[in-house]
Amino acid sequence: MSHTAAVFIQLGGVLLALSLLSRFASAFRQSAIPFYMTLGLFVGIGGVIPLTESQEFFEIGSEIGVVLLLLMIGLEYSPKELLVSVIGNRRIGVLDALLNATPGAIAGLLMGWGPVGALILAGVTWVSSSGVIVRLLSDLGRMANRETPTIISVLVLEDLAMAFYLPVLSAVAVGATIMEGAVSVGIAIGVVVIIIGGTYFYGRRFARLFSADNSEALVVGVAGMAILVAGIATQVNVSAAVGAFLVGIGLSGRVAASAERVLTPVRDFFAAIFFVYFGIQTNPADIPAVFLPAFALAAVTMVTKFITGYVATRRAGIAIPGRWRAGLALTPRGEFSIIIASIAVGAGLNVAILPFAATYMMMTIVMGPVLARIPDMEWFKKRVRARG
Amino acid sequence: MGVRVERTDLAGIGFRDDVITKDGARIGVLTYREGGREVAIFSEDDPDAIAARVTVTAAEADALSELLGQAKTLDFLNGVGGGVAGVYTEHLTLAADSRFIDHELGLTKARTKTGVSIVAIVRGTDVIPSPEPSEVLLSDDILVAVGTRKGLDALAAILSDSRA
Image 1: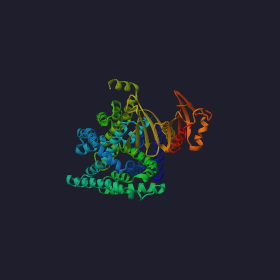
Image 2 (image 1 turned 135 degrees about the vertical axis):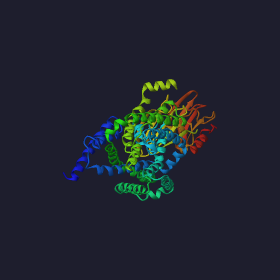
Image 3 (image 1 turned 90 degrees about the horizontal axis):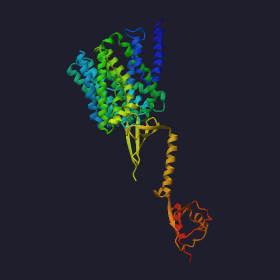
Image 4 (image 1 turned 120 degrees about the horizontal axis):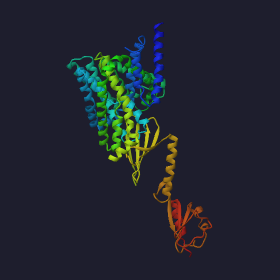
């Protein structure tokens, strides 16, 4: 069999399987991400049918997936929305970081992965999945609820915090000395601040590079810009993901809305490749050993995330049932946890973290939405009302 | 008579406007950035949750707002507000010495001369809605008239014409 034939057959088979899994997941109102990753476990390193020829495509495809995921997250926000969120909710942001990054950092140390492992796991446990949670709120008909703006603010702040966290992680990942690391982190943070500030004032001019009405030029142009900036960002150790995120933030208004529409299918395609590839890289044989610690960490950080949501909504003047809804809805972790783990591993750091992060994230993404439905149940409403 | 409208931003999604009624009920209008709209009625026993929600298209939202707008116009006509679109409602009392007493309403030629409509006659505790031109006017009748400021002033002048 020729190389091309082998690649096509493997890729086509995986894509078809992904499509079935995606339909299966949506029938059960579950996120498709854990299903994609599980498929990756079957066809990857140490899997049942390891696919070797298509590895190369999956690898580069998954890098593009990260760029597009971050680009789309950035496109959702305008610089103004970010500034307003930061100013209005900075205390909650700090509380969120302290409560949720700390357990990850401690776990990293306990697992014997050193300060770098602690930094990686801190990021993995910190960030909730905005993608999963926004879809969950929409599914549960809670978009208009009064606790929802607080939930969204927490998600926005976490997404923005990644623009600062990921460059730090990248600097550490390339094994810089403390001095070199401090310099490149300083550069990274400076670039991030300048770009967010610059797009706040010059965003319109940037958007004029693209036309909202020509969808063919738009899809190629915006994706091209994101990949180009991601490449430059990688070169200066700011992390490809952050470069793409900043391009997304820089675009707003009609161009952003149109770009979001035309790029969604492209993002879905490459994001699926990204999640499969993460499963491919993970050796299923390593999972049993990390299962219990990952479970314990998932339990602890779901509680800390619950506390974050509860306290944030209490401060916003939400009554007790709404605080429960917000706290439980925030528990799923998702794309960022996986992106963080894959950046760390891509840079050659601690491969042992892969199965741990994968197991951890799958637990929260499966249990979180189940927990989030509890406050809608009659027995729960009765109990909370009786006490409230 | 200010109405309380609260706007809350949902970064990346859209925004929600809440109207809080006099009775304390909360009605939310969720506007998605992509253009969809949702009208939500908040629950009575959980102030933060919604009890019902309806997704409306742009055309349906227009229809709804027109309906509510009409209701509002009627309110103005009923004298609750005033001054909208230059149409006013006035209660004109027929003076005891008016030359129209014991004559038919049609004789006032109110519509022809002033453009004002007499929509009702209040007689003691009775109300005669949409009176016929043949309705005979009595002393102390109150005519409920709808028209422009100018027309209403003209009608008041006509009605006060004494018998003499």
